[in-house]
Length: 122
Image (cartoon, rainbow, N blue to C red; front, side, top):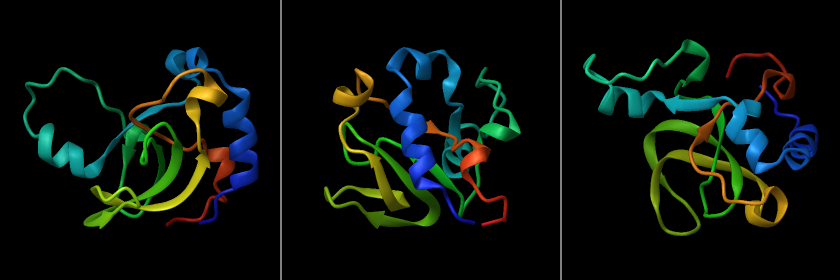
């Protein structure tokens, strides 16, 4: 599976922080987080299948701090350039300064829109 980084960057730069909060990007949950934190039905969140990031799949996240990067979810932990260990492998930073580009830092996991993926399975 290949990602259209140029198209994704243009799309993300066209958004504002408000547009992202209002749903321009779909908030996501990693399979690792679901296994750790959502095992019981006590959690009231409604997580749909299109929000689940499976192992080996790419997603958008603020990995380095005030950025928006593409990472690939893994079972193994990898060290980021900042020294932090995460269960993802950093693929590429799309936006280096979210505060400057979007107006505010973006926190959380987000699904990469399908139109920027080539359709093949990871």
